[in-house]
Amino acid sequence: MILEIALGIVSVLLFVSLYYNYKFATQILVMVKSIEECLDILDEKYGSISKILDVPLFYDSPQIRQVVEDIKKSRDSILEVANKIAKIEDENLDES
Image 1 (spheres, rainbow, N blue to C red):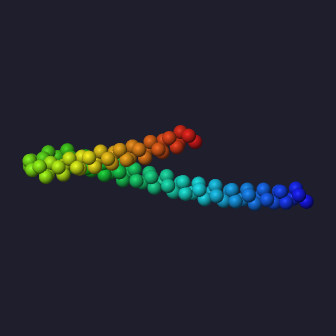
Image 2 (image 1 turned 90 degrees about the vertical axis):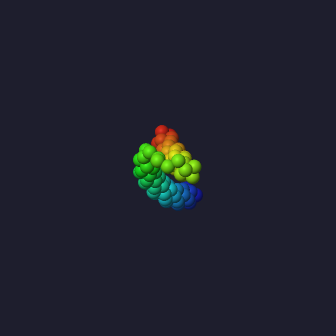
Image 3 (image 1 turned 45 degrees about the vertical axis):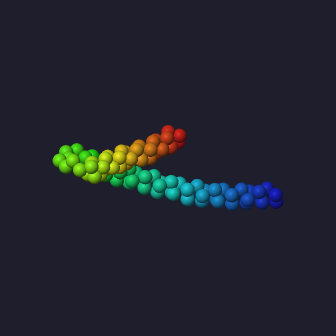
């Protein structure tokens, strides 16, 4: 009798554990897919900003120079964010 109750409790706990394992696994897969899509977008934007910055500037206004400098900093920050996200993904893949 006690063995049957213990077996029933363990079975219920197993099913609860399986449910949450499945739920969290699907959430992780959705998150990984989202991160990969974001990295693709960041890569695309980095390329387009780099092309724009390759065009020589023919106007010496300090305001325009400041805007170009801000664009360069934005481009560098995009690369930094993408590298950090990719590094986190690589570390997670190495651990598993």
